[in-house]
Each structure stands twice: as structure tokens, then as C-alpha cells.
Length: 158
Image (cartoon, rainbow, N blue to C red; front, side, top):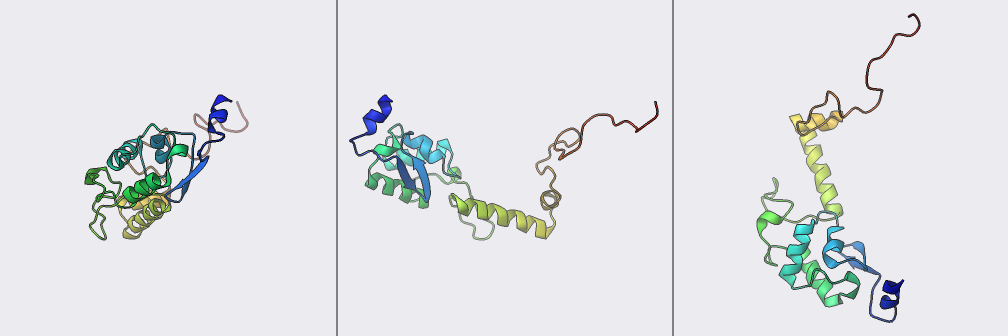
């Protein structure tokens, strides 16, 4: 209850929209940015250090100009001074560029990558199309969709 009393009467925003995602204002900026799909805690810390925003400050107290700085760094991380190895799409097969994909762009790109593998009939594509494990895991005991494990008995008889 004491936290709520602090928020009333100030310039606190309960919901903040960053990169087309609604984020809760009562969490730290670092943790709130990590809620955006495609951004990890390490990447959110790097973005906040590059923009000069305090990562432990509550997101609801951040001003509009700081939010704009963060969004600019999200949409062009290389210009913000982030290294290329921290991005989640390095050396794209189609363009050869490195970029940071977030939100629905990331989901769409992942789906097109899987569809491309399935079209080319690669090993990974075949595993995806059959609904099996893709990354070399063992499938003898795990990854079973349905049915009971163990010994099955014949019906009737002793």
C-alpha cells in the first residue's frame, strides 16, 4: 500500500509504451525492457548504458525524451554504440547485415527461416515438419506427444 501512496500525485505512469509493447511502470527499466520479446537482460543493460539512462530507476518515472532515446537505440543499435555480437540477427543470409529484431518482427523472421529450411528439405527442416526434436536431443524417453510410458499388457488372459 505504501508504494501506491508514493505513486499518487506524481508524474508516475503505470503503463509505458516502448517499441509497440506496453510495459508496467512499477518495474525497473532494465527488467521492463527485458519483457520485450527479443531483448535479454544483458542487451537491455547495454542499451541503457549507451543511452545514459539509470537502469535501476522505475520505468514509470522515466521521461518522454529518455524513452525516445531508448527507442532510437533499439531501432539502430550500431549507431548507439552497441557491438555487433550482442545483436540477435547477425549476418542475415538474405542481406548480409546484422540487426536487432524485436517483437512481431522476430516471430515473423523465425517463421520464415523455418519455412525456408522446410522448403530446402534440410535435416532441421525435416525435423521441424515432423514435429520432432531439432537440436540433437535424444528421443528415446523424452519428447513423446501422447501415450503412456512403460510396458503394455495384452487384454484378457493371465
